[in-house]
Length: 335
Image (cartoon, rainbow, N blue to C red; front, side, top):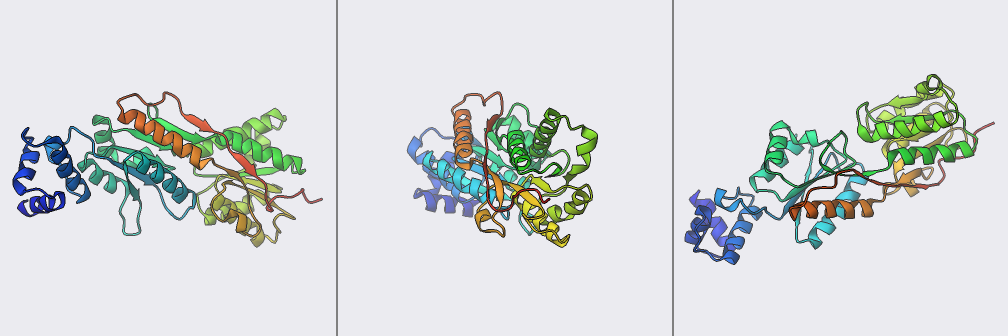
């Protein structure tokens, strides 16, 4: 412990005696000096002394499930820039190939008396039961963006998935498609459930019974492979166009369609969701629903700062409309 105190003292530019006084909660240390010492604990990755935990550290965890899907780095970049403007330090927490999980990162952040956490496209349950309990007990400010599960009582920012599904379906029916599939994420994934709800509403309004369109819906994992494996089921039902719950799924569907000998968009139309980086440069360029990442990041940081200031989070989820970006992966239904 003496070695660690010396590291803190060196980083903060104070004596070890001063560090010990801060650790013990002594009132003889000037507030500015105390802040420097506590900041040194944070930066060096050391747990703050109990006496220094009444104030939250300026660290904010950004929890994302992966970085291969371009939409997650886009949200991370937008959030990090806004946190920096607030004088807060973003800390990226994501699963890694060596087995580090979100729960592992959050456990370490809790040791630093974390200021808050923003979950992006993941599940609050990924924090782990012990960590989730600690976050609740400490009333840690939390914001969830496109949360994967239901989280009552927490600040939530989401894309309007139902609207996005209806936009895509309207576009495809205008092109003459009558049997339009939906490739969604796993059953229970909340954004996918909202897209399915919009899909059901669309067909209900047109008098198409559920028993007819049920076979046009496929649930799979969020990956290109998942999208590709869903295609045979849909083409067997006579589907000529597909709305997908992510761009990665859409690219997989295009691959799966080509395996079936179908040309996109001449024989088979595909719509994605996210408008991830490079979707304009795919073959063909992908028609997709664009999430307003910047506006959603603004709302998320506003909700976080509101909680940091001691005010309750918004009572209801904030829904943001999407914009359908029409490109080359959709065309008129083949005759």
